[in-house]
Amino acid sequence: MAQTPSIPKGTRDFGPEQMARRNYIFDTIRSVFRKFGYSQIETPAQENLSTLLGKYGDEGDKLLFRILNSGDAFAGVDTSLDSKALSLKICEKGLRYDLTVPFARFVVQHQNELAFPFKRFQIQPVWRADRPQKGRYREFYQCDADSIGSTSLMGELEMVQMVDEVFSSFGIRVCLKINNRKVLAGLAEVCGCPDKMTDITVAIDKIDKIGLEAVEAELRERGLDDKAIGVLKPVLTLQGSTEDKLASMRGILATSETGQKGLDEIEELFGLIKDAGVTCNVELDLSLARGLNYYTGAIFEVKALDFEIGSICGGGRYDNLTGIFGLPNMSGVGISFGADRIYDVLTGLEKYPGALSVSSRILFANMGKEEARYILPLSVSLRKAGIACEIYPDSSKLKKQFDYADRKGIPFISICGADEIAARKINVKNLASGEQKAFDYDDLEGIIAFI
Image (cartoon, rainbow, N blue to C red; front, side, top):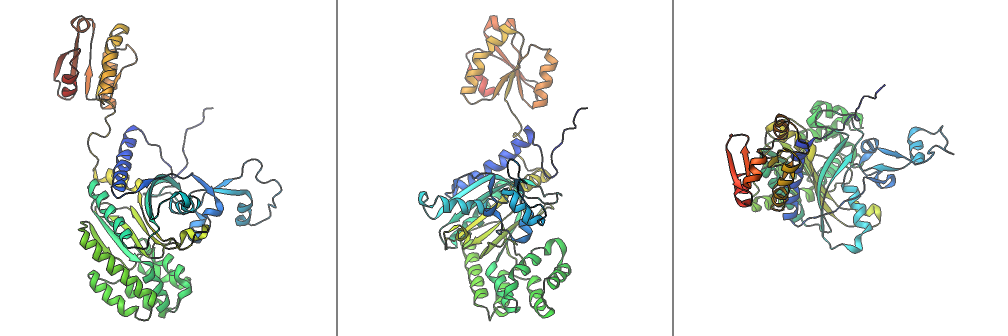
């Protein structure tokens, strides 16, 4: 009995048309990264599990795909261990959860080869053992840019500028939300719960998904009392201009030096954004938390304004991510574009350029061996001139060859038989308009101009 073909949940196949669209996304983002002086690197799909564990919080650790050790992974292992301890015995490697932690490992491992500040970008897949749903996949691409080795807020500004330019190039209206983890740390202090910074950020990071009441309930479950929640609640619902929000927060965080420093950084960054002429909608969102433990300063999140989906881009400042690998006090800032969600937004808004899926400009019909040999040198010349073309491989019925051109979206076809060979001519037909022209065999420029 034949096996039914399938792929794992949370993954997708991409055909030629989809790949043309994905490459449009990757090429656009890559070109913007390079404009700002970022160089491309790649890291392995699998990392040592010790590299990944403990970097994404308890919830992130649960979403790591672990790779079973090769050979008999269970040989000599006490199988009565609990599942967490057992997995550490039989799995030494895991699939990367994001590109930032592997980047930190890369920086430390190759520090003597790099010029700092080091500005890199990566466009590679990552894996998360999440529950698949709309806009959420288990395998998806990230397009990351990071600058490491400087504490200057010019790094944050570059992230904002790249967000602005990328989505402007795509024609997608977005809102870029900004907050600062120092502000959140200050809130934890004034709540009287400085040790519950992680609990607070994990809970309020869900506010867009579950609402304020559910966040309050989760905060109580995590050990915050009504007084602490009373301090947090007005912050999560704060309205008004950036200046108004900052003024309110100055009062709320009056007793927190850390919180005041975070507000200073926000104020400076918004000044830089104004001076740089950033055109996208930028908003100070004090409920933004981004629940990854390694963020220490500015944090970013981007939402599409005209399409319902989760965040399509995010990032932030991290002060000591390389310290866990033996290189302390190396501050960095990064942004990650979610290619798969951007793909869904562009598809939903029909924002792709029209010519992306065209694979070849012209198809040479195959009328027989002699005719194919007649066409062959011309096809070579066209490709050298940068024109994608192909010769139909079999001498089949013309209807089949026309159908092939139609299914592939090839706009021109050339049919050359014995008469054309005798006259040293090339017939070319525009399949959309029906216009047809005959060219001298050596009139390469004329053929190119027509197609």
